[in-house]
Length: 123
Image (spheres, rainbow, N blue to C red):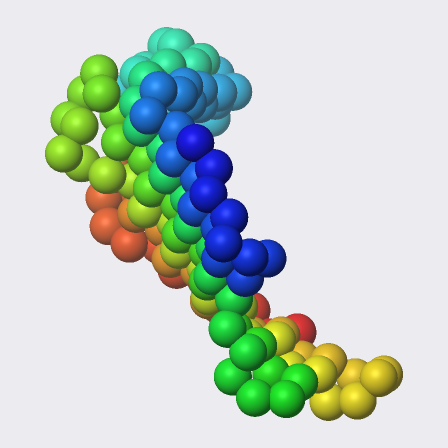
């Protein structure tokens, strides 16, 4: 189900979707799962709920803020444990030749890493 109020606000809801994780067998760690893929295997299949939302806000002239939120819940294993991927991008247009982007992303997926992962980019 996709709902779009405008180009600045969109929500997508997929109550039944699949997620497959592939890992090269050479990268698996001994006696541990890698990105949730069991040792000796190269893939992991999940069936669950996926939701994404996008919201863009013009803060002032030439400065906008874009928010993207992605959520995934695996019905087959721990449905209460939701994977989260949130990105905040601030786009600043200085003039027609120069722009600056600041991006902050945070991810929580306990199959990949038990805790929050973050990254920041200044371009």
